[in-house]
Length: 452
Image (cartoon, rainbow, N blue to C red; front, side):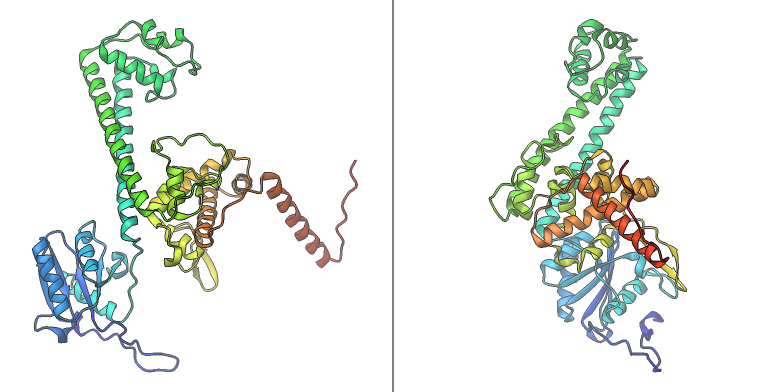
């Protein structure tokens, strides 16, 4: 085939080095939903390209064939979730498996076909031109799957709340205008009484919690509507779906707790930190202690990061930061570092790349929560907001949080907040130093004015 005769060795010339084969025993796999195309070096088999179905027995035959061909390194594209069973099987069989980004290998010269794709992957891998994507250890992968499932359940439960609100609005029950959250204690008590058959607005309003700011009269006014049967049926089903998601969340939290106990490295407990409110939708067990026993440091000491944010980050990255060469590589993987689109010595764009990274999304939410924090990070974020657009400031603050997490996990040191006043004084000293240097270059001297 035309692609099989591709010569990647450049012509000899001044300052050029030949591209050498670094992985002579590499194979390339084009992943599909029903079958996988596999290419090995041409001298290993009479048919160096073969197709295997995606059934488990065929995947076992695929691994046996690769071993018979002397393959030790396998490159495959990240196609949906179809690559996961084959990746896990080959990894368990002792192969070095690299999951490569499909964007990096999609430009194949010639006609597009599955056979050409797997051959192209095999050739690029043999010359060492592909890099594998980051994948945490197997225990962290289990925690990641459970955490993602929990996030999915929370979104499903949120949709059930929206369905409740829709049914109430259709009955002209304006409860959402007087109670901040219909999923809270007061809202749930009232909704369950409605589903049970209570229609007296004053009896329903009496179920409100003492912390609700709205008066009992205002709540009773909002609970006068048209109790149509079809809307009450929709409200009942939405409430049942909400309860069912709550039961599944409790089961998911139990599994997460058990997995965190399997990953723990010590039995010590974290020291007491700042007193903070309980994170919304946080698991019922002591998640802060479990995370501390897993990584040896308390990430929640960083302002803006609560237990759910720490869980989201650690479940995606794990605790072994040696897989990232530096904090800059870690921030780049998260998609939080500035872009480097430079041509002719001119910076064309510094925009961060688009990246659907769950850990980065959690850090962005944590950064946005710093707007009212009376800490050094809060002062840093507010100063960024005064200089640039808020989305850019959120990304920059999330980048700083990522570097702090990397430092804590690599050095094993606790984070200590110096306070807002300390940051402001440091910033003032930097400004004065820069002004003094500029004045010195102009032949002037900066003199402090006497207080009035």
